[in-house]
Image (cartoon, rainbow, N blue to C red; front, side, top):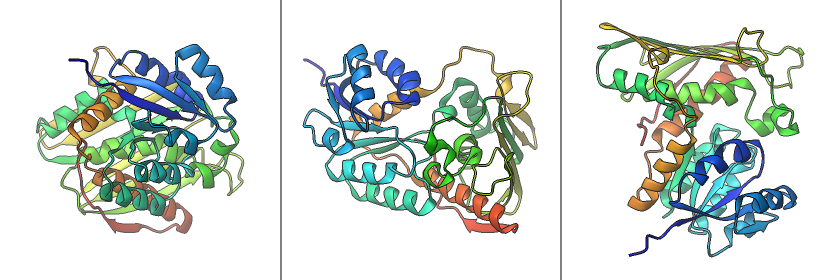
Length: 324
């Protein structure tokens, strides 16, 4: 019996596709690269020639319309992703979306609602949660090794500055600056450690080196209280003066001890392979993942930006949900 492969279409042909998706897909014969699309088709054509991709398209719509495409991976600026994902779901395709899902919470919530009404699977590319060192921390916390959680402290500081693409420097298109970029990963990891969450209070400070209030922020410092008792401290920065390329430290404190991602000293990968494996598993089971945690992450991200803008705490409720 010949196993049916998943015909995958890549929408976008930029840095994340070239550095992460193509190497991970090359090691996963469960997927067949059916097509790739970019704005003019030029970049997509160059990649297709090098990576044995079936077809080249000059628009997302053309790729979605192909009968040999079962699923699409959307790697475009966040402001474009909801419309593309919605069109793919409406066409009966399965969808994998890069983070953040959208440039605003409202757009993310609308996409999640559409996915939960559709027959297609919507999955999310928060790859850092699936890195081995972060899974090690998650397993310890959720397994009860620390007892009742008392505090979460997460940070991701990077020497590399904001990317040079025009959309990366436009918060309206990117969904923000470093908080949306690196901070969204931290939020997803932290919320995954608190599956019973119900409400939050959030404060946030943003700093921009240029002083231009319309520019993406370079440093974000957030203080969140979950369910009135659990503090979550978050720091994300790029273009930092570091003695190494990046500092990523996740610490969980409980009544019975503490744990950190730095406790892990085994083999490590970037998490994209694990994302693709989970996406394939959901497609094969024809099962929509729990999207509540994605909604909660987008909701908290929006609250942090609102808190930074107003200078006041923003309170809200979580929908709830776990990783799947």
